[in-house]
Structures are given as C-alpha cells and as structure tokens.
Length: 281
Length: 299
Image (cartoon, rainbow over all chains, first blue to last red):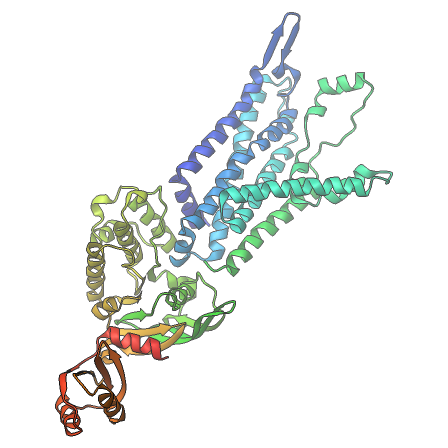
C-alpha cells in the first residue's frame, strides 16, 4: 500500500496542472474563513455573518463541510485528469509493462482518492476549529466536539464523488469527455427525478415517494449526505416562524445514506477494475 | 538451456480479425531473437499479450517456466513498446525514479543506465523537450533499470533518422554482448539480419518460420539467367529441370530458385546441350529480404 501511495504521489508531485488545481482548491477552502469578515454596516442595519451564529459549535461543522463540499469539483478535475492522462500519455500501458498489475493500478488511484479526501477533511477540521474558537459563542469541550459526524460524512462524500470521477476517467479516457459524462449523469438523475414527480403526481405523499426512490442514485445519495444547513440557523428559523412556517426537518447524517454511498463507491472502483481488466491497451 | 518464455498456441481475435493465430515458440536464455513480419502481422499484439496489456483469446504463455506469477515476471523483464511512453512534466531522472518504484529496484541504477544510453548530460531535462531518438534511448534506459533477464524491444528504431538508428543498434549490440537475452520485433530485415541470431517470421498472426537466421538464408541459392533469344524455350527447360523449384521473370532476367545443390556450370552445360545460349548466368545466395518475401508470399 505504501509502495502504491508513493508511486501515486510521485506522479502527482511532478504534474503541474494537478498541483495548480489542488493549490487553488486549498486556497478556496481557506477562503471559508473569509465568511467571518462579511460585515455590512449600512446606517442602522448591522450585519456581521460571523455573529449570525454560523461559526458556533457544533453548527460550524455542518456549515463548513457543506460549503467545502461545493469545492470538491476542483479535486475532481485533478483526479479525472490524472487518470485520463495515463491513457493519453500511454503511461498506463508502460506502468503495466513495468510490472504494475491492473489491480494495483486501480488501487493506487483509489488510495489517491482516499488521500485527497482525508487531507481535505483534516483541512476543513482545522480551519473550522480555528474559526470556531475565534467566533463561537460556546467554547465548552463537549460542544466543540459534538456533531463530528458531519466530518465523517464529508470524508465519505469526497471518497464517493472522486470514485465516481475515477470510474468515468477510466471509462471515457479523456478528461473533458469524462467531466462531460458526469454532468450528463447529473442531468439524467434530475430528469429522472422530474419524471418521478410526474409519475407520482397523484400520490398523497409525492415528495416522500420520489425521495425514497431517488436516494439510491449516486449523485442524489452524495448530496443527501450533508443536508443544506441554512434553514437550521436560528436567525432563519426565527424569520420563517414569523411568516408562519415551521421548519421541521432532520439535518442528521443518516446511516442508510452512508451505506448507499459506500456501496456506490465499491461499485465504481470494482467496475473500474473490471473495465481495465477487459480492455486491450 | 533455460527457457525464459514459452508461447503455446496463443490466439488473439479482434472480431473477425485473427491477429495472432496459434502462435507457439520458445525463447531460450542467451540468444537474440528477432520477430520479423510486415506491418500488421501481429508482432506488437503478441508482445502486448506476453506483457499483460492485451488479453489473449486462447492459448497460454509462461514466463521463466512458471516459477513466478506473470506480474512478478514482468519485474524481471525490460520492455519498450512502439513509442516511448513517459510523463512529459517529469525529467529523465524523475521518470526513471518512478519506474524504480514500480519495479522495486534501487534508484542508484538510474545514473548508470543513463550513461549507457548517453543521456546522462540531459538527466535533468523534462521529457517533453527530448527528441524522438532521445526518448527512445530513455525508454531503453528504463527497460534496463532492473538488469532484466530478457529485454523486449518492439520496433526500437521506428521513425528515427539514420544517426538515431545507428545509435540504438550500437546500444542493443552492447547490451547483447553482456549476455542479456533480447527479443526484437521488427519489420526491417536488415535490422534482424544485423542483430539477431534467431528469427521467428510471422505473417497474419501465423508463424511461417522459426530458427537460426543463418539457416533461413542458407537455402540452395538462386540463379539469374538472361538470353538474347529463345526466351520461351529457356523458360520451358528451366521449369522441367529437377533441381529447379520455380522460375520467375524480372526485367528479362529469369530467376530460378534451386532445391538441390547444382553448380552454375552444370546448368550452363545442360542448357547449351539443349541449344540455349545464355548471355548472363549468376548463381548467388538469396538475401534475407528475398527469403522473407518468398516466405510471406507463399504461405
């Protein structure tokens, strides 16, 4: 495993495009901190985002992982391009001739995926911790380290999403087309969702039925892992309450969603292997 | 004699196309083998199969008498295929370091191998700045990193200028004198004739000949004959002669392939007795090229 990781890291270290994209990614991740300085002072209206409670423990875990997950597309580009480049430079062929097995090749890419996800998670953990300590209203130890399951969900979300990228990279072999294929897939899931709404339009609980089916699709499952945190904010809740809406929604990370995402991760990695095994290079 | 690689009835089909057809041969340690065949004859496909990048349809092959798994075997093999494939953003040294990691060999070999292929001065240049000849030499260096028991080269001089071809051939000869077994695929007869001791001729995926290069060229020879008149009679006489296999015409010159040892004098006497007077008679050994064309056309 260490051998495969070191092979992969060697490839990453000397790939300019990957380094630049990853650098941008981590800069943007750190930029979450910039939310703290959003301040409006228009006469009597004072608006300071950090004081709205978004950096309160444990809410910050939810908020930051949700925002950080949006940035995962940058790393997706790195992953997809590192895989499709192996095809276009024919280095995949050379690696195999040099004695790397097809299984080891897929594993080395998967380890890279896990490593990227892990580093991102740690990065988000530390930025959030620092931001929280600076701005949170609650600083008790037990509160700080509660709700950490959002970080686990974040990690699984990245692993799942990058595995999907890995699969499409192997399948399509060209980075631009692979990204295109992922977008087409996203579109297809949404069209399917629309179709479900239409098909069950006469049901009593359309929403529920549609979501029960949709939760099994990969991209939907990925987005279900960390639910939007905005309506959980006290300020928003109060506002909603004032206009007569009560938000009763579960924001928890659900075990079933984790299981679905992990299953898809396995399917993506295993199919990548089968695909590579069957293919003549 | 130790068999390094053995192919047994190997087949590869791409739909209707039978790229490798029932191919069997053995590679014995210490020899230099050439796989000779026209473009598209299945040379690269065969090498692709034994190097684990192309899936066979049927048949099998074994490395080192099956003493180790095919993947482990490849770590004891050095191979370059068609084009040199490296990471463009890495320097020569960085590319070789990666291969050291894959093959599990010490990085200390890198400089030594770069010196063999005369790339030591350029070791810190990016691969993308290399000329084709340099890329090909780097590929040879990479194949040598693990001091392979057998070196497989697929069209190593393809696309190179005469200078580059010469350099690569010199390098191959140097490696061969150190006792490394070499398997060289080529469509250039001249190359095989110059470098190899054994040859396997394939066409349309079928083996046409395998054996020593010397024996392939050591046929009974050919006669080139010319007459000023009586062409028709000469042709008839040649075709009925028992020592002559076949006759072909080439610019008024008749080329007779012999199947027995006969001297030019005997043929001359025979034709003279029958009333045909030759204006030219040459007996010579056919070149490998001639042999190759005969083999590939007749089968």
